[in-house]
Length: 227
Length: 249
Ligand SMILES: Nc1ncnc2c1ncn2[C@@H]1O[C@H](COP(=O)(O)OP(=O)(O)O)[C@@H](O)[C@H]1O
Ligand SMILES: [Mg+2]
Image (cartoon, rainbow over all chains, first blue to last red; front, top):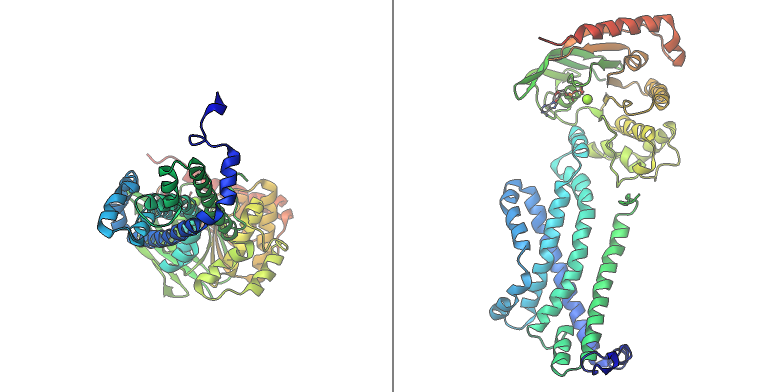
């Protein structure tokens, strides 16, 4: 019967709730640390991704050579590289940032390049006829045209960054939700594991909501897909 | 000042010749219609004038200056309005000017009002009907700093009623601005109604077959369509087009 399941296997929702409220002091700093890590990794990963995709876009011959490799590398779960990074860079913050950067990098590059590639040929034609320079084409047409696509990439990258942060903490760290989770797991504090899961989900949702809010502001007035 | 001279323009794509020795002149302040069947190479002529590619032979000159293969020398309205969906209407109409120099929002505002688009300055293109979008595209061409305007079948996608309205509107606006216009169409009535001169393009490969000067006085209005003179011209043009349309053996 359901109620016969012991608490260490599946704690009651009320127990989890209690732990979430009463244990705040024991995990708040972990939460903060993970959020920081995810944000820093996200910003670096997205910046590198944007710079790389814009460079590739402006150098079509290089893009043709590199793009298939990028797509191929998307199929490798970046996380499997984590142990290697720990061996090379130790347990500090650097390997963690590298992991998050890597998981954020690919969705951004693929989404941005796709956005550039799908630039409307009619609008391109108009701009060329009107005598637009290469830099005007880029600023006035290609970038705004790619923005919705870039935002799709950002949404994926935002949730990936939280996941990347937690997993990198599992591999070795002294604070963070990943550490809190590992400790809870080894002491069979399943209620705490659940608290961690809930907060990871909340963190992902907050990140996601921030990107959506930004998207709403930046793409104001654009026609939605369903209109 | 803006006089366009096309001299012996020849163009082939792959091994198919599209234009053969096309020569014509559009004088200062003149409204010239270029009439030809679909696929005859009308848009191609515009693309060449606009410098999207170079003709195999021949030159274009504007006010005596060779502009062959140069972009940004003419103002242009493409076959579909090609408005930028993320720009508001006012931001759209200044785009042509913005590419060349600093845009003048004051003039843009006045021009939008004249075009019957008052109150739509901050709307987005998808909120406008097809006719209104064409008007926006045309205002954008008018506000561009170039004095020579090329219009590529701007009304062909509109219904009959809207088209008549738009033709009348175009005439009014043009009469105030007097920029030189080269207007491409495959509609005989439209060409007769709007133009000072009418060039007829033959098919396969295209060349200028006839160059008619139209006698209708300006300002013109819809009553012109019903006059005997107009109908006679219509017949004449129709016959001129028929001569072309034999399938080349
Ligand atoms: N870039 C191009 N490459 C190859 N063929 C082309 C190209 N542009 C136009 N054509 C061909 O040239 C012909 C004339 O096209 P177009 O100028 O668009 O005709 P129109 O505007 O009179 O309808 C068509 O047969 C079209 O297939
Ligand atoms: Mg055409």
